[in-house]
Length: 320
Ligand code: AVJ
Image (cartoon, rainbow, N blue to C red; front, side):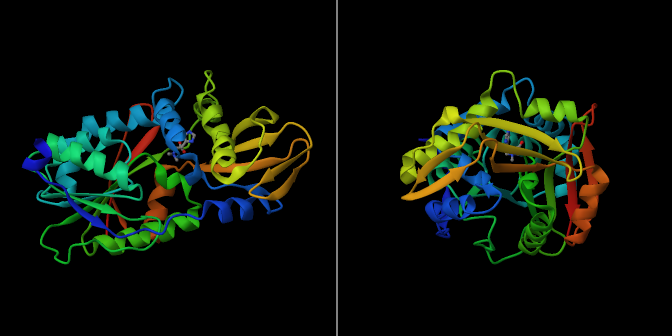
């Protein structure tokens, strides 16, 4: 068996599980109701997100993979040979595979909060790259943590693809990047995928696909809350709404109550006016300069940036 030939070293940092009941009730008690996007990803939500990544309107995934394929060799030379490569939130294993083909690091260290998902993809990667040392770390990368290695024997690099950084408010993104810098230490490098500001029509199409997959992804939150918290949301009394907020340079996703209604959630009554919204996601879009400024404020220096021909998406290399 391949996993026996190249065993995965597992480090469990025991991330505190989210208190979904408390967080959802607190968000629904706010004047502007909100639920955090991390709650999208139950089994069905993860399946729907994978389907989103295949949609013709959703350009980020395929565009980023194209950039990694095309410029992988150059990225590898910026990140340095024999690196310790940390991947934050090791979701799509396709992207890391493209990078590993070019980079061949000494150690690959995927960090993810989902224990099962992490182990599964780490085992598959170890089997596909028999010479690669794989150290899987179960941790919440959005909270402070340190790497379970004490040496700086290898140059350190981090990979954070998918424009996941867009889910953070800019001030939180800055704090997050600062912590990544501390994790990497002096001369560390960060390779990060960032969706670019563009024609709002293209942005809005990516979050309002014709097949309604993104709508199903958004509405699945209500089904999940019904099932896991004991609630009686009626999915057909809410509709998906996504638009580009130009002032704040972000896509916003909301669930709009189509009529006045009272919903029971975990033993509490939640009232909705007709047209009232639950804000479920922000996805910030950056210019290249805008993201480099954010990186500088977080203590990084811009090194290189790669984009596609249509300037849809960017991959930045920043140095500590
Ligand atoms: C995983 C946060 C990068 O913002 O594009 C896709 C999530 N939401 N369609 C994004 C998402 C709706 C995605 N990120």
